[in-house]
View 1 (cartoon, helix red, strand yellow):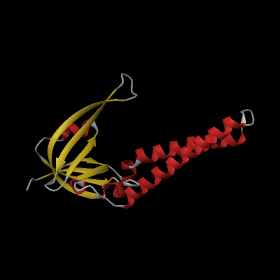
View 2: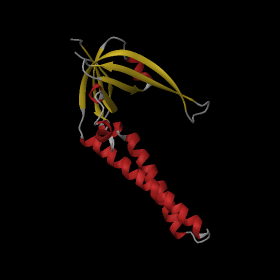
View 3: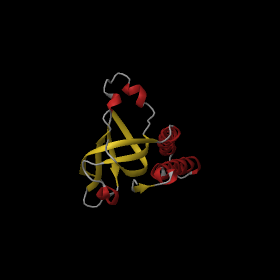
Length: 171
């Protein structure tokens, strides 16, 4: 019997996107209301703040559309062979300036996948083993348009919002 290594509900899988959208809409909306109703600032400052607020709200709408497209595209299960586990260090705003990502590089014989995992889940995955990853393929606003002239676009799958990881037998 296959062992479940990781499992999440769709709400948990999309919680990062939803919290980000809530923050962007909240910040943009509050800033726009502040620009409209604040009488102490000069008019140029209020107009500038209003423009920045509208840009934030527009970015939120774009993010909401991309999240909706990802969710409505449905979940996919890929039977993959783990080629390599990597610990990736990158610059970020965290204390110390370095963030650590735990990445799995895998393939199913036709496509290559990269899965970003939490450290506990990453530790349970073994190199050169097979797993069933259930996830939502990432969709973007202009992804299909930007990839239409790329002959290698079908060789790589961008993954996001992992729902389940199960051990599997290699075939």
